[in-house]
Image 1 (cartoon, rainbow, N blue to C red):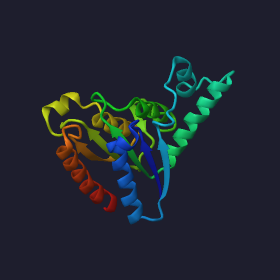
Image 2 (cartoon, rainbow, N blue to C red):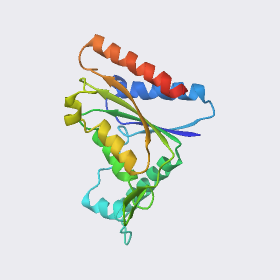
Image 3 (cartoon, rainbow, N blue to C red):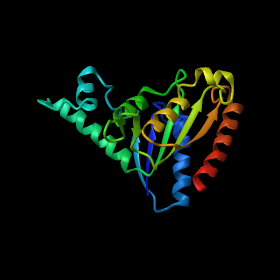
Image 4 (cartoon, helix red, strand yellow):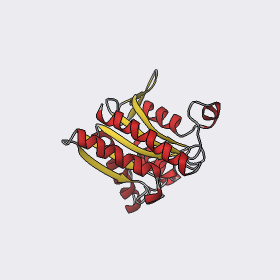
Amino acid sequence: MTLLHIDSSPLGTASVTRQLTANFVKAWTAARPQTTVVYRDLATAPPEHLSGELMQVVKYRNLENLNPHQQGELALTDALVDEFLAADVLVIGAPMYNFAIPTQLKVWIDRICQAGRTFRYTEKGPVGLAGGRKVIVASARGGRYAGTPMETALDHQEAYLKAVMGFVGITDIAFVRAEGVAMGPQALAQALESAGRDIERLATA
C-alpha cells in the first residue's frame, strides 16, 4: 500500500493542517506498518502556475518544438500524475484561505487533472479514471462554518475538493476538520481535540 502525503500550507510549524496530516500518517502507519509513504510539500516546492504557454503544453499536449523550460514542466506534470495514480491513499492538508484552498494546492490539482489519464470525456460527459483510492483531507478553518448557512454560501474549500476528486472518479473521501482555530487558544485546543478523535477513528478503521 502506498500513501501520498501532501501538505500545502506555507505556515511551516505554525500550520494546523501540517500537524493534522502528520498525526494522521503516524496513526495510519502505526496500524499498517507495511505502508509506503511518499511525501510532497507543495509550499516549499510549488509547481509553477499554468500560464498560457504551459497550458498549451501540459493540458493540451502540444508537444512540438518544446524549449527546455517547457520540457521540464511537462516532465514535472507527468511525474505528479504518476505519483497520484500510484497512491492507494492520499492525505491532503488543505487550510481554508479566503473561503478556498491555497494556490499551491490548486496548481497541483491543475496538474493532475489530465484528460486521458485521470478523466476522459465521453458523449455522455466526463468520466473519472482515478477511482478506487481513498482521500483524507485535513481541513483547518479560522472560523466555524460546518453545518451552517454560512458554510453553504462560502465554502469553496471542502466542497471544491470533494467535487474535483469526484470528477476524477474518487468518491471515498473523508474530512478531518479543525474549526475555529483563529478564535482563541481554547477554541484551537477544542478544534485539535475534535480532529484528533477523527484521526483515530479514520486511521484505524
